Structures are given as structure tokens and as C-alpha cells.
Amino acid sequence: MNVFTRFVDIINSNINSFLDNAEDPEKMIKLVINKIEDTLVDIRTSCSSALAAKARVERSMNDVQAQVYRWTERAEKAATKNLDQLALEALSEKKKAMAKLDALKDECAKFDIMIAGYREDIEKLEEKLAAARERYEKIKEQADVEQHSRKAEKGFERANADFSRYDRMNERIDRMTAERQARKASEDAEKKFREMEESEELKKELDELKAKLNK
Image (tube, rainbow, N blue to C red; front, side, top):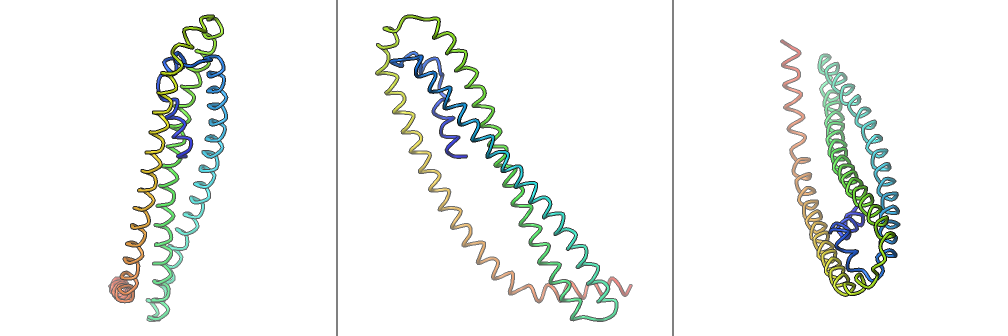
């Protein structure tokens, strides 16, 4: 989506102002319209793919939720019969299923953010496309090519300034990637400590379950 967002930024300035400074406004507006239409197709395709992927994750969430219920029932049955080891195994499987469920929920939330971003880009592009088409109709009615030629240099200077903004955006993306990697390393360390404590937590949960069932 970053590629699409950068293109939205390119045309995010006032289209009329940009075209007023173009050497060949009619050619330029056709180029803009074609680029917007092509980009809209790409974004809509990506949005559809993200929606389909989210649906698959949601189906997986339902399956894993069912596993959580099943392992809970098994743990209760084993504990009722004083089969402690079997109950511990069931609780362990339940905990794994719950962790998987949490991960799927996080993944689903990321898809929500991604889809929202796609939809926002689509809305922006559709607005720009309507404006570009309206301007194209006006350009066809105009014959003052000299006026547009005098402003061409200024228009290209603005275009170059826009592309500098896109380079800075790429730098921000690189920083975000580095931050994600650092966060992943921290999460891995946290996972190791949780695994060390898991055995004690499971035993405590079993004691609580047995106490509950013996009431």
C-alpha cells in the first residue's frame, strides 16, 4: 500500500494548479487520469485480497476457539477423575490454543488497519479522478497553450519537490522496519520467560480447577 499512498501524495496537491504549470496540460491530464485508473485497479485488487485473507483468518479463529472449548472440557473431565497428568496435558494444549487465538486476533486487527488504509486511498483516488476528468473536459475547450507553456518550469519544480517528499517517506518506512525488528527481538525474549513460568502456571491452574470441581 505504500506505493499507492506515495502516488496519492503525488496528486494530492491541487490538480488545477499543477496543470496550469504544465507544458502540455492535455497530455499531462491524460497521463494523470490513466495513472489514477491503473492505480485504482491495483488498490482494489489488493483490498479484495486483504478482505479474503481476513476472512480466512476469521475462519481459523472460529476453529481455534472450538479447540479451546474442547481442551477445557477434557481438562475438567481428567481432573474430575484425578488424572492429573492428563489434565495438565489438556491444560497445556488449551494454553497453546489460546495463544494461537490471540495471535490470530492480532493478525485480524492488522488486516482491519490495512483494509481501512486501502479504502482511504481508494476514496482519495476516486476524488482526484473525478477532478482530473473535470479538468480534462475544460482543457479540451481551451486554446491558450502559450499561457501554460510559460508556467511549465514552475510546474516541474513543484513536481521535483513532491518527489523529494517521497524519498523522505521511504526513509520513514525504513525506520519503521527497524523498529518492528527490535520489537520482534523483545517479544522473543518475553516468550522465553513465559515458557519458563508456564509449568508453574499450569500447576496453579490445575489446583484451582480441582478446588472448583471439589466444591
